[in-house]
Image 1 (cartoon, one colour):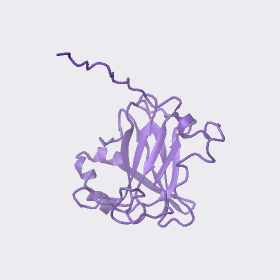
Image 2 (cartoon, rainbow, N blue to C red):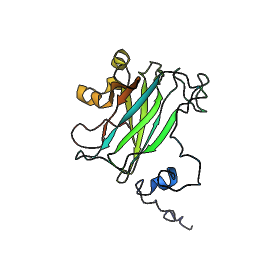
Image 3 (cartoon, rainbow, N blue to C red):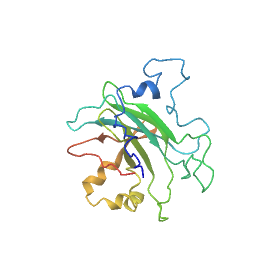
Image 4 (cartoon, rainbow, N blue to C red):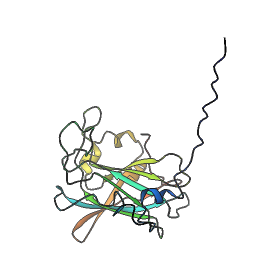
Length: 209
């Protein structure tokens, strides 16, 4: 009996996202025009979007506290009613005027980002308990083999945050605080500051999703 060869398909070597990820995902940002009119994910809201307008912004830093300048950041979230703009959404119909997903490169000057979005509604945890309003954040960059997932909770949702099923799984208060976006106001809009530390002291909590 002939033995079956099992080594003819080799595992592909892992690669990090970069340094050319922006050419494929955000060509206009790197001044490659004519691919599409505007880079995907830049605009989440329009004039007909329902819900309270907010801004989510912050900076991504490395283990030494230096800005990360070549990363790509994506966010996704529920609409104001707590529904996702996804074919997998079975609880109702999400706001068609809200994208629910955004993407942008970090600033090459200081590693910052800024999204204009809406305050997300509450969505159920797998066990049915309502989660606090939150925005899921995903980061890729050189040196990161797998995209990093985290969440931005809103500081002014204290009661909801206190009962959130995921936050309650993090026993250390100082670690939970790395997922809370502080609130201020600018030009009449709530602005939530969510800085992300990739390593080291005060490292942001990342989720195994």
